[in-house]
Amino acid sequence: MKKFAYASVLALALVAMISTVAVAGAGHNHGKKTAEMGKCCIESAEAGKGCCGHDAATVKAAYADYTAATAVKADMHKCCASALAKGEGCCGKDAAGVKASYDKKVATHKAECSVKADMHKCCATAVADSKGCCGKDAKELKADYDKKVVKAEKKLASN
Image 1 (cartoon, one colour):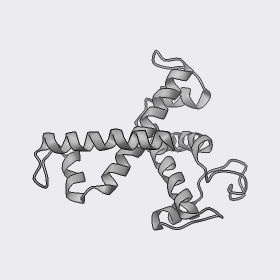
Image 2 (tube, rainbow, N blue to C red; image 1 turned 90 degrees about the vertical axis):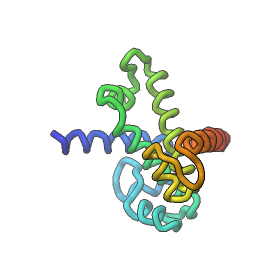
Image 3 (tube, rainbow, N blue to C red; image 1 turned 30 degrees about the vertical axis):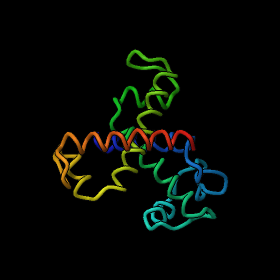
């Protein structure tokens, strides 16, 4: 049952990725009928390289979309993830509400990852553990982090 649930989440993530990832497009289906981020592009993104005719920045952005979509789908109620894939409403929200909630969570996840990547590793760990670091107490560190996340979300929204 866990394998089925995991496979379902991955399948839903791929559906989301198809509509949001720049790399997933014509010529990038690795011989399959549906577009998806191929293993070569995932490895290239992690190495900071281009792949499949796309530059490193495009592959990196696509990978950020892919990982954010995967993480958000894994955190969703199963009913909501299924409804999202079908374009239906769920949990008191209509289809547009489910999609808007999902899009907001993906944007927030991408912003959080971006901010954490720019932080000292000790500070990123401290934020996750609700502790202080580098001369800031837990409250100050979290407030600084939250400010940076909001700024990153605005920057992502303007792109």
